[in-house]
Image 1 (tube, rainbow, N blue to C red):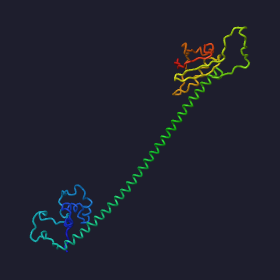
Image 2 (cartoon, helix red, strand yellow):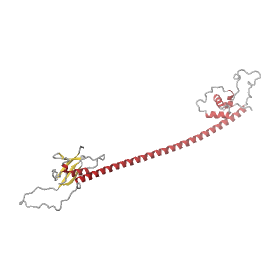
Image 3 (cartoon, helix red, strand yellow):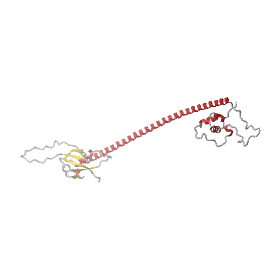
Image 4 (cartoon, rainbow, N blue to C red):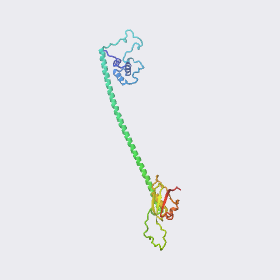
Amino acid sequence: MAELTALESLIEMGFPRGRAEKALALTGNQGIEAAMDWLMEHEDDPDVDEPLATPLGHVLGREPTSSEHGGPAGPGSTAGEGKPSLSEEERQEQTKRMMELVAQKQREREEREEREALERERQRRRQGQELSAARQRLQEDEMRRAAEERKREKAEELAARQRVREKIERDKAERAKKYGGTVGSQPSPSATEPGPVPSSPSQEPPTKREYDQCRIQVRLPDGTSLTQTFRAREQLAAVRLYVELHRGEEPGGGQDPVQLLSGFPRRAFSEADMERPLQELGLVPSAVLIVAKKCPS
């Protein structure tokens, strides 16, 4: 039984002639299976049907014509002899074998593509897991840095507050050492001092009352006020010290010195007035003072 050429077999299986010739040429005419593999691998290529630029000759599985040899065949030439033709039954049998081979190649190709698809899916899942893990590590790092930043800011805030408290304590100690005594103390009347002896109106005229204590109300710039009782003989500096210790901390940790003013009549007390007793300044038995920031000299 005569066999079909590789080119004829591919055409019998339904492949276009130009595509079959190209597959045989590019696979070096190594057989129909190699050509079929090439056709199935490159069937989706956009240039699969573009012809080759060079003559195909024997590579395509066909005999060269007499014109390709340079002239007509001479007498006795075997080039023009035709091949034995196949019967219809033989052609069908050979076509059946070829179709079975095509089906086998198709199954192998589908199995290979399925394996490749499974491998791509595994890679995609593995990359997704790695990306998720990297994202989680990044979030954990950001949370840790944020916690460290909050901790650092809190430590700096506590340190700033501690410096302010230490400064207030130093100022308090220095002022207490300078002016002596305890600021804001309310001494009880001395038990040794004799009280006023009541006398009959008919014996002597009433005398002016002497006050031992002075009640001072201080109005702060923010609208609040402080009230404290001082001894009449205490210096005005004691009132200023009391105000500076109780007016609260200002933003920024600094405490500017203050200046005391009387409401009515309007009067600004100087540094010399700070060493004068309250009763000498006319602030006994009670007075209202206003606190204003002292301009730095």
